[in-house]
Amino acid sequence: MNEYLKTVIEQTECRNEKEPEFLQAVHEVLTTIEPVVEQNKDLYKSVALLERMTEPERVILFRVPWTNDKGEVVVNRGYRIQFSSLIGPYKGGLRFHPSVNLSIMKFLGFEQIFKNALTGLPIGGAKGGSDFDPKGKSDNEIMRFCQSFMTELYRHIGQDVDVPAGDIGVGGREIGYLFGQYKRIRNAYEGGVLTGKDIVYGGSLARKEATGYGLMFFMREMLGAHNTCIMGKTITISGSGNVAIYACEKAQAMGGKVVAMSDSNGCIYDENGIDLDCVKEIKEVKRGRIKEYLECHPNAKYIEKSGVENPVWTIKTDIALPCATQNELILEDAKNLVSNGVIAVGEGANMPCSEEATKYLQENGVLVAPAKASNAGGVATSAIEMSQNSMRYYYTFEEVEAKLDCIMTNIFKACKEASDEYGLNNNYVAGANIAAFKKLAGAMVAQGIV
Ligand code: NDP
Ligand code: 2IT
Image (cartoon, rainbow, N blue to C red):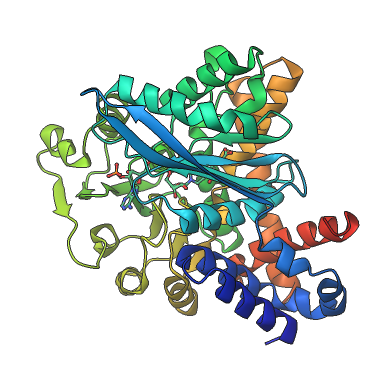
């Protein structure tokens, strides 16, 4: 391996040794951009380009005290990683989940820089969140938590500074409470400070659908480049949250047959095809568990999660769409999918496949759509929401969807061109990293040592 690259990987491992997810994300990027680094090693080394790209511009960590319905005071930890403002204001979601820690926040912030660069829109990279667990909390508890979280976060964000949005555990309800508190503190209507807002107070049509729809536009392009399509294919999806639900909706509209979805407890298998209205009712309205699907569809099967295998990846499928969380598809799962004849895996979640799983899939001829590219439709539509807020004018659903389709098509083109240029044999994971890195490296050199 290139000496400079090797040194930077070693230094990063040394400086962040307790951050496995962050190291995993950095390792994947640095090892795949080697041909570009090799061509420019003296320049990059002289400006410490890779050292700067892997070090966040700013890490904010704060206390979030709030009172639960029993009157007890609870203290959570809040984070905002402002990773890179190279090509626009810091931009990226907020995750509320008990697993949230510095490593997970930094991996997500790092990935966001590359994803946002691929969209072609002026947005930097960030991520934030808290180890707060929204499950089982009342609406009032969620509101009080969001208000306390924003009471610290507000001083670090702004529509030209840093623009958070949703992620796991943060959807329209949470964005509403966060926006209300921000507006109250600032005494100004700065609509572009958060994205994923409800339509009535400044959100964009199609933002809710954007990540899942975008994933399917990317899959359509990728399959098309290999002379196949979504129509008639069997599809399994992990998760049953925002990304999974709208990936399912578009997959069905494109003629695919979705037979499985999941949550962290287990997965449902419906050989007749998933009834998405039923899933929406359980997840978006009742905030229940996926198992409840059997109450309406007693002939469907429920497989409880146990052991290392993820049950959703044991089901025979043509296309697998991991849309839940990081490292939810590991080597054992990849082996199950390959032995069942999978042709493509599309990452809706961030870093859902472990590095070993990705390698195994690619070595066995499976097309892998990498998260930074294939789930970029969410943040791209967030950027379209920001531009509508600046214009004080709204696009129709069809206008936003057409822009999203065009962005996803262009992202696939960029991944394919990079893969072809460097002779990477349809390795779109490497293609996405290279296409994004080239843009970022150019901007970094142009802006000097900052
Ligand atoms: P949601 O909170 O709406 O849904 C998350 C889903 O994933 C739920 O079904 C949840 O199950 C499941 N899940 C979460 N954590 C775990 C876990 N540790 N193990 C197993 N299942 C889990 O989140 P989103 O749909 O918004 O996000 C899903 C993924 O997509 C994340 O990786 C996120 O970073 C990524 N993403 C999201 C975007 C967006 O716009 N929302 C944009 C781009 C990427 P349960 O209810 O049981 O916890
Ligand atoms: O991971 C992601 O890209 C998101 N959670 C969406 C971020 C955003 O700013 O819309």
